[in-house]
Length: 125
Image (cartoon, rainbow, N blue to C red; front, side):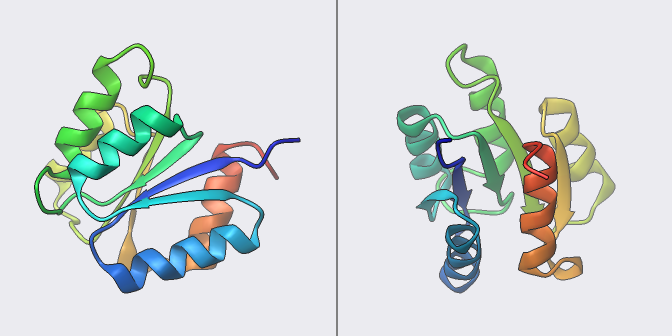
């Protein structure tokens, strides 16, 4: 079986590397972007199985990335899991309305729990 492809779009390089390492150890093929524009380009190029997407980022925020992904045929079926520190209900609801499968508040989940959530979403467990 092919490794599941994961795209991490996160502007905090420390968090990005922690998540990337954790997922690589779980046999994922991991791609990373540190701003929304790069994230969108990588999603179109690599067509990952799932995207971990931060909302507050430079150049293009996560909700705009999500909106773009969901409006194009080649990327509209990519699962997007919002990973954010924004817990305002309106932001979260916007993300879910735009097509995110779920959201996780960064401060409430350790990386192992995020991995478990992604595996569940991809039906790998």
